[in-house]
Length: 359
Length: 144
Image (tube, rainbow over all chains, first blue to last red; front, side):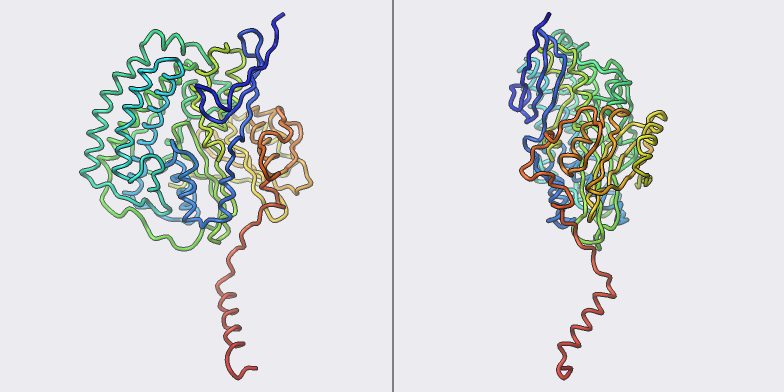
């Protein structure tokens, strides 16, 4: 009979530099159970609404996470705008869409690099991070910041991108696309990459649905769940097509992120071509009195920002449900039955963001 | 664009039955959220099917317990543990019960009614003006 061991993984681990911990119960080389522990760095940001004016709180929402910074402020601002009945100018909606898709590109490329590092392909990691730089440069030129953008505000956006710059962004993304195709060719066709990812960390469509999977993890198992289809910001004017794979393994999750990166480049091209002239914000008067669940598609899946106000400048409740939190039950399911050596790849293929989870 | 959102208040005793119905209709569990009221908690269960967003809401006092829905939606156990640890709401029969160790916060149950001070709603404009007039009169010379 195999001997049972408990292997602790995290909160510090060479391929998972995020504060999440798993107790892996193993029999020989096989994982038979996984018990996650979170809350190592829980920040209690949701309760900061008691001390911050609802307008200023957009800055706090921006700081929930680095990779999805813009998406958090977007979701929060949308919720407040819905409660207050604010009509955001069309130009601001398009600019929000462009920054959101740039965030998706930078997050997915970063994930590709980290994944390459996890399966021991260091030069591919460096190439991926090199290609992420142009996106960060665009952020810096258009917002003045590279990570925490701070451009989304209740009623619109803080900065405009002139039409020449929009054309310039599209041109630079066309160059980036060509470079990306080169490294993505390695991710898709390299024998060792396929060997490490194909057939590993499988989750069926039914299990993914029942366990509440979101984002690339759900779409890699054949579930076409993509909140952009709801039509927030300027997505209703663009051709959004959820990227779906059916294999349900780590390789399929990698393919989804690669295809989504190219789709995001195409969405930016579409949005830049349609961005209308006009103001970028409206004046906000009053305070939110009501409640709303704003749903936004982050790089990791659907994020929910719930806002409840009673007409005062301080909100009664702000809640964020991040996709990583919703993906944890599926992560446990996937880990059970896997080989110990595959655990880092499996966890990384889900792209957990503990910064978001520990909001 | 405003996404239609339905929020339906239900009785606590009907919750599990309605959730089972939604499961059989193919709804996915989106989230379970909790809000602190002056002396109660409001639990909202959100579901989605083909982008139709539905919410069930129950209100419970701090002494009441709530039945778990993790037997229907296995992924619900994390939300339920979170609500227990942050709000102190007792949830019975959770599939994977961390017994208060999912969140190890410095302040126990930081979102409970004892710890949260809800903002005062603004005073109606008429009342504010009335107060102002009364104050002016009181301060005016010759009125004492």
